[in-house]
Image 1: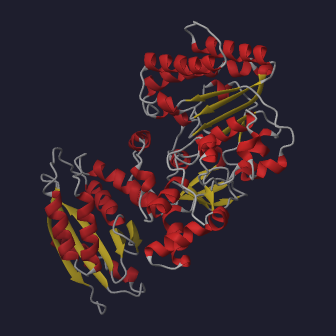
Image 2 (image 1 turned 90 degrees about the vertical axis):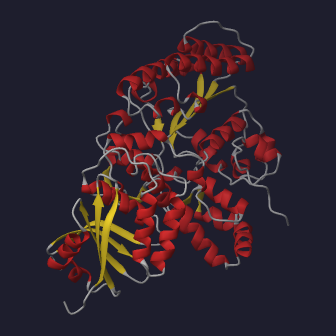
Length: 525
């Protein structure tokens, strides 16, 4: 039996079903939402996690297209299949816009819905047009209206770090969403998706009856592909991938988990795989960083700069439950936004303290995030062959040639145009941390405590443990002497691997490595 085609880049439920493409059945969640106590629901998930497809599925359901749901879970659950008029608004194209552009865009998407129902209105205010649209559709059809808003926060994300611009655009969006409260008598169901929360938008400030299911255990698997869904609905795909790669089924599953699994969207959640990366991996029969290849959101990098986030701190973090309810523009820490954007995920939850433990979900996120951050530590001039250099360094270190790896890095840094003098040792520490973190399969940590001080960088490979001390505008011998004088190696004596001491000196005027010294640890010292 030939496998079904994958819906790569297709976010329309109707098209997936009529073209008989692979569809992971989420219709039980659709029934649950549409028959819940709340008629106003918000769902937050990272980009490319299936939010738009879920909105499209809801549209087909409310439009009564029963034939599209044949064989799916909802077919046995829904008995009435009542048809409702649906207004569908996507804010995805409202990014990177100035005030006037955004207002025109809102009028444009309202106009598309007006045309669908044969309604004409020349009002210039988006809120007036939206209110008029809802009431007229209700009067013409005699049925309550369904409003579906996809990526409600898209116009605001890229200016989240700009206080003045954010305020202007937020006021526009506030104005646009405000009719949803006054039009309540005419509405059957309102569903919104996005990534994060912005205060002073009528969705959250005025619609006090909206239910946020983003971290609700009952809906943790509503987007993405759960481990159970992978092993059952995509079992043949796993076998095909294993055959293509010349590995066993078990090995293929472990590789899929290591690269794309690890997401949890509630305190108690199934393992969730990134759907975009998983489908692309199956389609291409190869592992790759597909989610990052589709674009790195500038809003996150900008917010990380605003909060002065160091790459070395991007790992295990902690957050109280209340932090996830804090509006984006009022955040005191970036941790919740990193979670909402998909760069951190829930690893544990303590009920007593209401404390979440968060960490990087998988290899794809770790590698992709550090690759995105590296240009910031090379003055924005990270050459295209930077990833090749890091790959070559990985090979040399695996061959027990740290000297060759540092020489290669020195040569590469010499090709990077260097403009600004950085008289800060921590800058180079973070740069090396990112580079070493991108070396395949190695463990790296910074500021590692010992009885006599803190080691700048510790790198653990399959065959060695490297203790690396950095100096700025001094010399490598001084760095090596510090390792020996403070006997840093003693702290790692029980690691079970040979220890190598590395002193590295940077020259701030060139932004490059000036010299280095490498010394095998004397176990008797």
